[in-house]
Structure formats: structure tokens, C-alpha cells
Image (cartoon, rainbow, N blue to C red; front, side, top):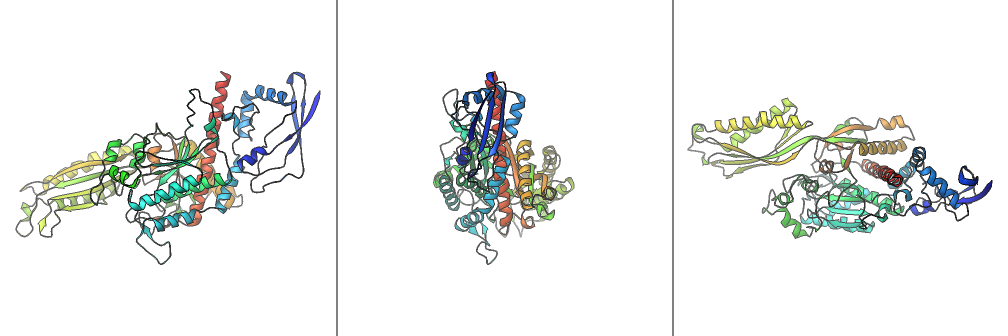
Length: 580
């Protein structure tokens, strides 16, 4: 029987930036033919430790003659179901003969590591500073209080203020070690490389595996607040900052995507750029969208003007994502009213946007009797009133946000009216039935009866957005749930029961988000944090710094937990291929 002693090094932890943990003295005992291998350990002294970042699986590095025995034993056990479970669930140590860049060469973060990085973010973040500095510099408007940050926002997509915010984002992302690309819709992709980037490929292309992305938007409503969309982008940058400062090596590339014109406030299709990426909206339609107000400039013209008409194709095929995580304010009252700190979002409700045009006949207000009037304004008013109250009966949300009257003269009966119509429901089918069985027939009837003794009005519909109800990926939702509980349990001194009571599960988003489109092409989930008074799309929209940071912690943990899980999938796929 042969016995030799080796030293286990903590070099793997140093490369991660997680510090060094006490090394081990390991006695390896082997019998001839390698049929028996046992390890026993004892602590060695005087090895530096980073108390904030404990780890439980230092790597084995050795040049002793026992190397071949150890490698052979690993190769024999590596393909058994039992050893695979042990490896992946308990501090996996890469085999010494692993190919660089392969899944088997990567040592994923443990859950303890992930929680510690989350704590680091909480203690060393620039989140509130970046939110308020950029909002104050680029688009602040509608002051509502005396405080320095007590203003709303007016940063419409592709305006000069939006360009300035984008330029800041690009500079910041590059400073965090990201490669930055801009696609033909102006979406900005900031990606930090992963271990898998160096993996060998059969075709020699070296094309990276799809990244794990965090995404949201920087454009706002004309009378918006400082958190809608902005929080998600800034929190993504904070997650990248933690990875850089702690020198963390993720398996997949990790990044932030800043989507263009999510609000649909300037160019009237919400989430238009993520819709193009998902193949749901034609590029030509998006580029030709005209601004709602102003000089009627198109989206393509404004992308060119501010220098964000990129060369990269806006497509899920050209830029695939392994997953898309989005942190967002709730924009509603549920979390605050129920005393919850984090919402795990299961999906989004269905909604449609229309532009409805009613055409009547202009006439003099003083000489035209009621019976002879084809008053487009009164017809439109009746339609909106019907939609609103019928929607309430059917449990459908109905809203009108834009209303235009032509020719706009005090003493001329309106001959044409255009208004927006926003309808929403948790059920796609129910929404379609509401439109087809209630709204369209009734609108036609109202138009025909308005001015029946002269020239009846007419009504036409233009569908601007059709977003079916969308459920998010169970695996991503699980990562968010586990991360929320991890963050809150740390706040509650380990009291998991209390932490569970602070999470709202299975939330359905009432608002549309870019995640609705990404969910059609990649695994997706969202994280909600409370909105004060449920207020959003308003200058006084507010989420506390504490809630913002907590959301950023959950975002970081969710991405790292998912990265660990997708590494597991890639690892098992590699092993299955090797066995074959």
C-alpha cells in the first residue's frame, strides 16, 4: 500500500477574488490498480482567510507521482450518476485533465459565495448615486419638492437627453470590462466574458455561448419618474461592478442590455425594440414609426441623428440570450399594501393598443341643428364611455391616454377625432372576445347613429400593439425565489419563516415590459420591488433606496444562481457526449 501527502491549494479562490481559505493536508492512500482511494484531511495553520467570503471546496493542485492515480480515479467515477450528483450539488472540483473552457474545467460559485457577493453589493454599491446623478443630468423635469432629487423625468426615447444617458451607460459599461455593441434598433448590449468563451468549438468559430443578461430601459414617460426602467439598468451595472471588483469568473458571459423605446411614449409601440429582437415586430415597421408629437420624425431618422443606429442585426438569432432577468418597480400597490419586500413575477397580462379614428363632418356651431350634426367628438366620447364601463363589468382594464380633435376651432363642430385605446386582461382569449364581441360592434353602432339625419360618422381601428399574456420560465422564477429568500433571510438573522412572509409569489405584471418579448425566445423572469403608494408614470414615483438595493441584491443572486444551473446543464451535456 502506498501513502503520500499533498497540499490542497486555494488558488482557485484567489482567481475568483473570493480570498483564501485554510489549506488542507490530505493523505491519499491507493492500492495497486487504483481500486481503492481514500482521502483524510487536517487543517494547516497560518493561511490567510477572507472572513466575508468563506468557501468549502479548494482545488487540488499537485505535481506528485500520485497525480496519475488521482486522475484515473476521477475518470472512472466521473461518468457515474452517483458521482455526478455529488460533484454538482457539493462544491464541484474540476478534474486535473479538464480541457480549458470546457464545463468540466469550471468551478461554479457555491450558494454561500453567491450570498456573500450579495452582501458585498449591499455594503459597497453606487446604485442610488447613479440613479439620481444620471436623472438629474439627463432629463430631469417637473419638480415636485424642494429636495435635490425631488423631480420627475422627461427623457423620451432618442432625444438628446436619451443620447446623453446612453453615452454615460456605454462609458460606464466599458469601464467595468464589458464589450459594448449597438444593434440596428439602438439596443445597447454590454457583455462581460465568461469562462465558456474560451471553450473549443467543432467548427473553430469560437462563438461564445449565449450570455445571461439583465435588461431594462432608460427612456421615460413625458411626465415620468426616476425609477421606471432606470432602476433595472443601474442595478445591472452594480451587479457587473461586483463581479469586476471581486474578480469573479462566471461560466457564461453576463451582461446588461438597454432596450430602446420601451415606454412607447414618443414612438407609439411599447417594447418595440425587444419586439423586433424577438421577431414579433418587423424591423421596417419599427424604423418607420413616427413620433406622436413634434415634427413627425421616424424612429430610424432619430437613431441616425443621435448616433445609435448600430450595424448589428437586432435578432434573437444574431444575439441569443441564455436568460433575461429584469428588476423593476412594481408600479402598483400590492407589495406595499401587503407588507412584502420582493415580488417574484410569474408572467404578464395580455394587452392591446389601438389608435381609433372617428370621422364626421365639420360644420358651423351656431347654424347647424343637433339633428344635422355628424359630431366626431360626441361619437368618440360615447365610445370611450361605453368601453370604460363595459370593461369594468367584464373585469377588463380600459384607458385612453391620447385624444386629438380636428380642426381644433372653438366654433367648428369637430369633423375628426383620434384617440388611443389601451385594453388589458389576465386572459388573452377574454381580451380578444371583449374587442370582437363588445367594442367593435358597439363603436360601429355609435358612429352610424351619430348624425343619422345627415351624414353618419365612421370609425376605423389601427392595432398598434398586441401582447398576449405571457408566463415566465419556471427555472428563472425559481432562481428569483431562492435569491429573494436568501437576501431576506440574511436581513432577518436567518429566520427563514419571517423571510418567506416578506416575498410575494406568482405575481402577474399588469404593465408591459421588455421581458414579455424576451420570454418568447429565451428563459425569462422579473423581480418587483415596492412602489410608494403604487404610483408610477408620474413625477412623484418613488421606491426607497433600501428597496432598490435589495432588488439589486436579488438580481445579482438570481443571475449567479442561474449561471450555476446553466453550467450544470452544459456540464452534463459534455459528459453525455464524452460517454458516447
